[in-house]
Length: 192
Length: 191
Image 1 (cartoon, rainbow over the protein chains, first blue to last red):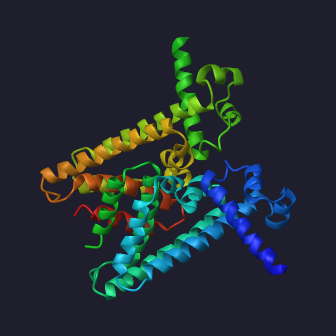
Image 2 (image 1 turned 60 degrees about the horizontal axis):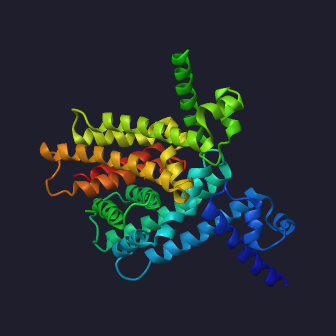
């Protein structure tokens, strides 16, 4: 029974995350959540608390998925530099609806972070994890001689995190694939 | 009388624009606007029609402010590198950006995905910004500051995207010297 409940909880949380991701925090109503999560309002309150606590949990869940996937991609066997490039190329070649949906972290920074400290803390932790994955990837690339020894990879890892934000927003603003590819090519010129 | 009315309208629009800038489209109600500019609901609807229309006007006003600032900063007698450095340092440090972010980015995230008209306005503002980067870089190529080999169209697209990234990074509570480091790497791509 306990295990079943846990499974349902995660599945339900995942559905809530999809709604927030698609619509944004403010535009998501309790009714949207009830419809999509397929449970009674009372169960939502009992299990997750109010809309804001549900959102924080959904954002954390999203962060876990994204940081795990990023780490997996960047630590793949072979060339660290190529792994980093495939991280950015994936954003370039995403289908339009995914570009339009963007990233829940970026969307939340934009919508909530100045007035919502809890969201800001979660976002900061997610970005730190992504940045440290970039850092390790760049360090490995440097060790393999793929990027020059004299590069400040700490600064570069922040720059790549910032560039990821920029690229996601540019993609959301309906830029052509060609333009996004140009942006990514220049992002990587910093490593020459 | 007519002049008085025009003056008040401009001031009210400026205040409304700052409200949308702070709270975004979904986070701003007509009641918030009425409270902020201190007019009666009837006057609001007579003057600005509805929330959507006043938002469009606010977005255009914001766009014209940003473009005016960008043109002045990027196209002048200084070197290309000096201009780009000033531009990105400003993006990293101007208090309004750090606290409120940027209305264009907010609009891209919140409204543009569902609204072709708004997306068109945003697109035009960004295209104009890219032409200023392009002009700045072209001058750099003419004076020999930047290599003729550089694809300055791609660089212009990158700088527009990097502006978004930098403003967002500024909102994630990162330290000032970390922001400076990002600016240095962004500008270094012209070398």
